[in-house]
Image (cartoon, rainbow, N blue to C red; front, side):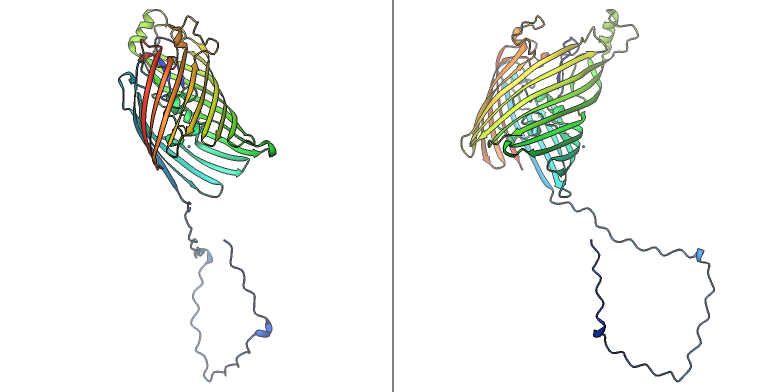
Length: 452
């Protein structure tokens, strides 16, 4: 998630961040028996004497016979499905640095993934995905285990997943990294922030899910989960400190979608709640400066714990697909409470951020799709105009993004996208990368993706 401690130490805190047996044959009827053979004549010579009896051996000294084990057959998996994707692109902004040094342009827009899945039985399925990316300053090139879980569907209304599980959040979080499944290059950042992709894409734990028909009222689809977030060690962008450890206490949530008896319409809500501790160590210069200023005792060792307890994300969603049109709207509130063991330097705060967007897509032809969205992020839902003196400029309080995208599918496995953004405000920018931000700025991106 995107954490900000609001102090000089941390310019920003963000997250760049499992036979039957043969039937007995009946005896033939008595009347079908063959006639008995005549008895053999008695022998004319006496039989030979029997051989001498073998000496008795105590039964304890003779090991019992051990039957050879029946040959066993290993687990036979059904067809293993293998899918993957690889993307490359670039971006440039007219001002400000969004995902890296975009003001000078960058070709760091690489993503790749490969996933495997198979049905072990009619009700049990397993799958996993490896993912890698190098997007702006979000360097995660070494493949990481994105998700890996087992899925047991006991009944249509109840199934169980366990492992590293894709986390439901809004309409599109479960497949936000599948470029071919969506139109935008950047999903609306108010609800699907790129910097929070790693911790929000999955969690480690358990999930229950299912769906129920409601007769003439449609159908209900639901999920609930409990586990812990998976946050990489490069989750924080710190100045004057290093991240020692991340203690993800828990993450829990639930999602419900109602499919009314209107083709293509779904309406739902998601709630997510998490608790996290970041343990950092200040560098020696910062530690000595604090001791010299009398803010900490001389025995201070530079170790600080920053706690996000709890973070709560609420999202309401609606999507309607009709013929070649797609309409989607989502509204979210992100409540954050932060405290630290060094309040003089990293003070506690409570945030109530407002996030929403509206999106329209149109399939112009079998190979061309176009659309756009308007996405808004207000750092404080109670101060949308930025009147609080804590903002150096009022436009630090919001970020309003008008985006348009065109997509061309060369064939079923290869596509190209071009996307333009006109942005007002800088609330979602990393402050350390933008010491002198400008209010109005533009962002242009292009991307090509191959899938299999």
